[in-house]
Amino acid sequence: MIAVGTRAQSDFVKKSTDVLCLAPSATGLAKAIVEKDKKGILQLGLSSATTLALNYGLEAMITKDRPDGTEHHAFPSTHTAVAFDGASFLLRRYGWKWGVPAYAVSAYVAWGRVYSKRHDWWDVLGGAAIGAGSAFLYTRPFVKNTDITIAPVAYGNNGAGVSVVWNM
Image 1 (cartoon, rainbow, N blue to C red):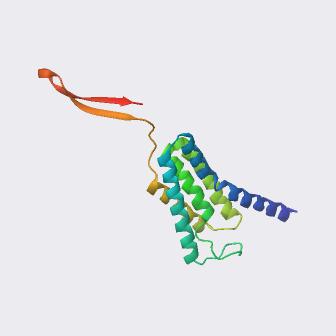
Image 2: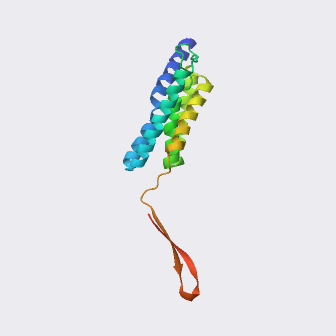
Image 3: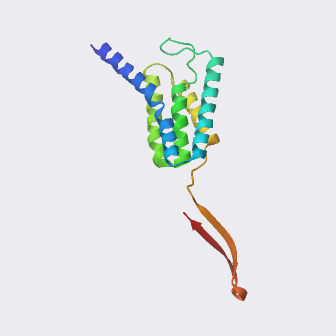
Protein backbone atom coordinates (compact mmCIF):
# COMPACT_ATOMS: atom_id res chain seq x y z
CA MET A 1 0.00 0.00 0.00
CA ILE A 2 2.86 2.40 0.75
CA ALA A 3 4.48 1.81 -2.66
CA VAL A 4 1.22 2.69 -4.45
CA GLY A 5 0.82 5.88 -2.44
CA THR A 6 4.43 6.85 -3.09
CA ARG A 7 4.09 6.25 -6.83
CA ALA A 8 0.84 8.22 -6.97
CA GLN A 9 2.49 11.03 -5.05
CA SER A 10 5.48 10.98 -7.40
CA ASP A 11 3.15 11.05 -10.43
CA PHE A 12 1.30 14.04 -8.97
CA VAL A 13 4.55 15.91 -8.35
CA LYS A 14 5.78 15.17 -11.90
CA LYS A 15 2.50 16.32 -13.47
CA SER A 16 2.34 19.43 -11.30
CA THR A 17 5.87 20.43 -12.35
CA ASP A 18 4.89 19.90 -16.00
CA VAL A 19 2.29 22.65 -15.54
CA LEU A 20 3.92 24.91 -12.95
CA CYS A 21 7.16 25.31 -14.89
CA LEU A 22 5.22 27.62 -17.23
CA ALA A 23 3.59 29.70 -14.48
CA PRO A 24 6.40 32.26 -13.92
CA SER A 25 6.76 33.06 -17.63
CA ALA A 26 2.99 33.17 -18.13
CA THR A 27 2.71 35.52 -15.16
CA GLY A 28 5.49 37.69 -16.57
CA LEU A 29 3.78 37.87 -19.96
CA ALA A 30 0.41 38.70 -18.37
CA LYS A 31 1.99 41.42 -16.20
CA ALA A 32 3.74 42.93 -19.22
CA ILE A 33 0.51 42.95 -21.22
CA VAL A 34 -1.46 44.58 -18.37
CA GLU A 35 1.26 47.22 -17.94
CA LYS A 36 1.42 47.75 -21.75
CA ASP A 37 5.13 47.03 -21.37
CA LYS A 38 6.23 46.26 -24.93
CA LYS A 39 9.90 46.28 -23.97
CA GLY A 40 9.18 43.74 -21.23
CA ILE A 41 7.40 41.46 -23.70
CA LEU A 42 10.41 41.67 -26.03
CA GLN A 43 12.86 41.05 -23.18
CA LEU A 44 10.89 38.00 -21.98
CA GLY A 45 10.73 36.68 -25.55
CA LEU A 46 14.48 37.05 -26.09
CA SER A 47 15.24 35.52 -22.71
CA SER A 48 12.91 32.56 -23.26
CA ALA A 49 14.26 31.92 -26.76
CA THR A 50 17.84 31.99 -25.46
CA THR A 51 16.95 29.69 -22.57
CA LEU A 52 15.35 27.12 -24.85
CA ALA A 53 18.10 27.30 -27.49
CA LEU A 54 20.87 26.83 -24.92
CA ASN A 55 18.98 24.12 -23.07
CA TYR A 56 18.08 22.04 -26.12
CA GLY A 57 21.55 22.56 -27.58
CA LEU A 58 23.17 21.19 -24.43
CA GLU A 59 20.69 18.31 -24.24
CA ALA A 60 21.61 17.34 -27.82
CA MET A 61 25.34 17.45 -27.07
CA ILE A 62 25.35 15.84 -23.63
CA THR A 63 24.15 12.27 -23.32
CA LYS A 64 23.18 11.76 -19.70
CA ASP A 65 20.69 9.18 -18.49
CA ARG A 66 17.71 10.24 -16.45
CA PRO A 67 17.53 8.75 -12.95
CA ASP A 68 14.33 6.90 -13.92
CA GLY A 69 16.06 5.43 -17.00
CA THR A 70 13.52 6.73 -19.54
CA GLU A 71 15.76 8.86 -21.78
CA HIS A 72 19.32 10.01 -22.40
CA HIS A 73 18.79 13.78 -22.30
CA ALA A 74 18.70 14.63 -18.61
CA PHE A 75 21.12 17.58 -18.56
CA PRO A 76 20.04 20.34 -18.21
CA SER A 77 16.46 20.31 -16.92
CA THR A 78 14.22 22.15 -19.38
CA HIS A 79 11.39 22.48 -16.85
CA THR A 80 13.71 24.13 -14.36
CA ALA A 81 15.30 26.37 -16.98
CA VAL A 82 11.91 27.65 -18.13
CA ALA A 83 10.70 28.20 -14.56
CA PHE A 84 13.81 30.12 -13.49
CA ASP A 85 13.80 32.17 -16.70
CA GLY A 86 10.30 33.42 -15.89
CA ALA A 87 11.05 33.97 -12.21
CA SER A 88 14.23 35.90 -12.95
CA PHE A 89 12.40 38.03 -15.52
CA LEU A 90 9.72 38.88 -12.93
CA LEU A 91 12.30 39.75 -10.28
CA ARG A 92 14.47 41.87 -12.54
CA ARG A 93 11.65 43.62 -14.41
CA TYR A 94 8.99 44.12 -11.72
CA GLY A 95 10.79 43.68 -8.41
CA TRP A 96 10.91 41.32 -5.46
CA LYS A 97 7.13 41.32 -4.84
CA TRP A 98 6.73 39.49 -8.14
CA GLY A 99 10.05 37.66 -8.11
CA VAL A 100 9.96 35.98 -4.70
CA PRO A 101 6.70 34.03 -5.26
CA ALA A 102 7.91 33.08 -8.75
CA TYR A 103 11.18 31.77 -7.30
CA ALA A 104 9.18 29.73 -4.78
CA VAL A 105 7.30 28.09 -7.67
CA SER A 106 10.59 27.54 -9.53
CA ALA A 107 12.20 25.96 -6.46
CA TYR A 108 9.23 23.58 -6.22
CA VAL A 109 9.66 22.69 -9.90
CA ALA A 110 13.37 21.96 -9.37
CA TRP A 111 12.67 19.88 -6.26
CA GLY A 112 9.82 18.08 -8.00
CA ARG A 113 11.95 17.09 -10.98
CA VAL A 114 14.44 15.48 -8.61
CA TYR A 115 11.73 13.93 -6.41
CA SER A 116 10.01 12.33 -9.41
CA LYS A 117 13.39 10.99 -10.57
CA ARG A 118 13.36 12.84 -13.87
CA HIS A 119 16.58 14.67 -12.97
CA ASP A 120 19.32 14.82 -10.38
CA TRP A 121 20.49 18.00 -8.62
CA TRP A 122 23.15 18.77 -11.24
CA ASP A 123 20.49 18.74 -13.96
CA VAL A 124 18.22 21.19 -12.16
CA LEU A 125 21.13 23.44 -11.12
CA GLY A 126 22.23 23.59 -14.76
CA GLY A 127 18.70 24.43 -15.89
CA ALA A 128 18.29 27.08 -13.20
CA ALA A 129 21.59 28.72 -14.18
CA ILE A 130 20.62 28.82 -17.87
CA GLY A 131 17.16 30.26 -17.17
CA ALA A 132 18.28 32.84 -14.63
CA GLY A 133 21.33 33.80 -16.69
CA SER A 134 19.29 34.38 -19.83
CA ALA A 135 16.77 36.54 -17.99
CA PHE A 136 19.44 38.63 -16.28
CA LEU A 137 21.19 39.09 -19.63
CA TYR A 138 18.17 40.62 -21.38
CA THR A 139 15.91 42.06 -18.68
CA ARG A 140 16.05 45.63 -17.43
CA PRO A 141 13.94 47.11 -14.61
CA PHE A 142 10.56 48.54 -15.60
CA VAL A 143 10.05 52.27 -15.13
CA LYS A 144 6.58 53.50 -15.99
CA ASN A 145 6.14 57.03 -17.35
CA THR A 146 8.82 58.67 -15.27
CA ASP A 147 10.44 61.88 -16.46
CA ILE A 148 13.39 63.27 -14.57
CA THR A 149 14.80 66.66 -15.44
CA ILE A 150 18.07 67.81 -13.90
CA ALA A 151 19.21 71.35 -14.66
CA PRO A 152 21.73 73.84 -13.26
CA VAL A 153 20.25 76.90 -11.57
CA ALA A 154 21.89 80.30 -11.07
CA TYR A 155 20.69 82.65 -8.32
CA GLY A 156 22.31 85.84 -9.55
CA ASN A 157 25.25 86.76 -7.36
CA ASN A 158 23.85 84.67 -4.47
CA GLY A 159 25.03 81.31 -5.76
CA ALA A 160 24.18 78.33 -7.91
CA GLY A 161 22.50 75.00 -7.50
CA VAL A 162 20.81 72.10 -9.18
CA SER A 163 17.11 71.74 -9.88
CA VAL A 164 15.62 68.24 -9.99
CA VAL A 165 12.05 67.74 -11.25
CA TRP A 166 10.55 64.26 -11.11
CA ASN A 167 7.19 63.72 -12.84
CA MET A 168 5.54 60.38 -12.23
